[in-house]
Length: 505
Ligand code: GLU
Image 1 (cartoon, rainbow, N blue to C red):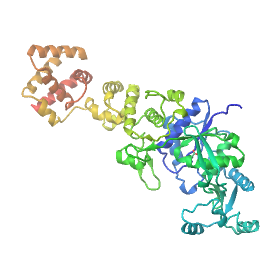
Image 2 (image 1 turned 45 degrees about the vertical axis):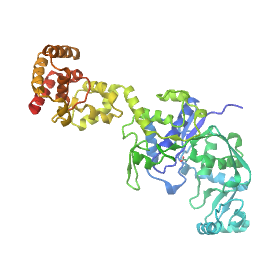
Image 3 (image 1 turned 90 degrees about the vertical axis):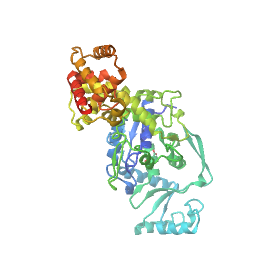
Image 4 (image 1 turned 90 degrees about the horizontal axis):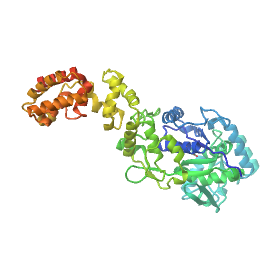
């Protein structure tokens, strides 16, 4: 048999912001497709019109654009298997629903919501299946004439899949191995609703995977319970030979405690669960996103890649290309992956260190503008070079290096108490004189001249340097002293010393 071309899909329902777990699913599909020279398809599963949220589709596309996950086909990308939006494929599904009815694999059910409710009240744990369907109002219990009359009257109906009881259904899963479910636990799932003339998720999903020649279905574990029905549907259509291989990815778990990661965990512990900020059009609620929180897309990708998969060694920092080369469904875990958001921060820190200083400077400039700082670009790059190892986010840079750009006007009380001595004003005035006489204001030369002066005067190096730092920075932090004075230049350095002496005496 010929190796099948790898074709995978990411098939979200546009019901709101894309959850970070969905991003991981899309990423794994992307890595798998790229590794095998296959296609990744973007399909919109919007057959449940009640849950449709305007803007969700655009949001999802923008998220992948930001993250660098590229699709080969699908909504907004085009391709030969379209349309890729399920709401535009009504005719196609109608044909296949009819086919299942003709094959007697599915039937029409006319039970109203009230009638179903009454049944549920009457029979505990009621399930529409082989044990109950013959007591219900459907095309199995009505005559053909009655069914036609009902339809002619305009009664609404659903089409249900007729599950044959007590049969073992085997789902071959590349991560979980063989999963066997007895069909008796399955209910006769609704495949189609006459009221909106639309199929449900199950039917549309299978028909599309078949028609779009999907080779592998890689999706979240929450879809595993649907898989036996999907296998049965493939069989009912006679498509066993082209059935895709399944891979159900492990759940993302709460950072602490047990259970599935939820938006509430993010709100409580202060991390986003969405790739981009999401403004909910219904509630008006604004939820934070990784992009707006200052994460680099490369860091988010690397972090997500390792939630449920590892390369089999200790390697953690991997570029998209390395991930493509190393990814392996067989190395995905069955057990849920704890969502360690602190690790996400760690990755961001690593990627900030790796990133070109000029690129970080570009990201920092808007923040400088907010503080009304305008300095030559090279100066910003120099500061980034000195300070980036101290931050995990670009937005933290101002806090640690604002003093390079704006002279202190106040001095930290605690530092004054600890570091400003009796003779500090006198010593700093002298130091200013020494610095004023230096022609070569390079880091090395300043250091040499100042150290010689300290030695000659038998001053205490620590005391001088602490006071010097307080004068230039306003507090006790910052990099090497002469890096600071060199960056500020002679004039600015002298003026800051003068001001500190005046204010602190
Ligand atoms: N529409 C489903 C979702 O929202 C697709 C599940 C699948 O991949 O089969 O995730």
